[in-house]
Image (tube, rainbow, N blue to C red):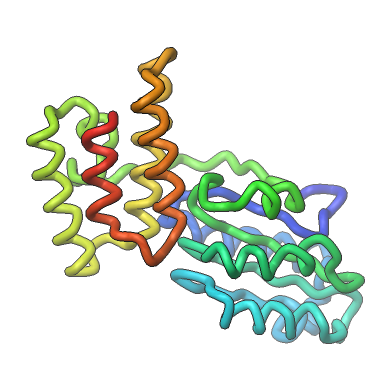
Length: 223
């Protein structure tokens, strides 16, 4: 827990680590008396959502507007994606929250956050071990080693996993982010066309309405 607590903090983490981060944060908030233990059920709120849209913003607005029963109130928010419209609606709340109100957002990737919103947060870096899937379908190193035809087969497998709920959209977005990061590391001077294609993929992956299959196929051809 930072000594000088910022009114709006953000943590980027694999989806698999969300639960442990929330548990760690909650304990620290109570231990450091940021929220008084006697008011932990009212002044410390945990909001978990697969994707945050404009309808969900009302919950955050309501929390921001009400008074704390103790000295402070804190909302911890975990999500795998935030729509562009929801991010725009968050701008003023995050920039000018009510007094004694603190927000912690936990999401998979920095690429999912608009620069205008990201600039209003203080990023917290945690020393976490990123757990890669044991399945080669979500292994970025294996994906990049394969020829395009094999990548397309991997994508088919990922889509089946999504349909059977063996993986989440957030985990696939996280996989794309790791593929892009590794690709950048391996190609210090990438071709302009490939770079444009990859930027486009990361942009569309932010939008929950976009087709994951099309994004992954585009990525397979670009890297």
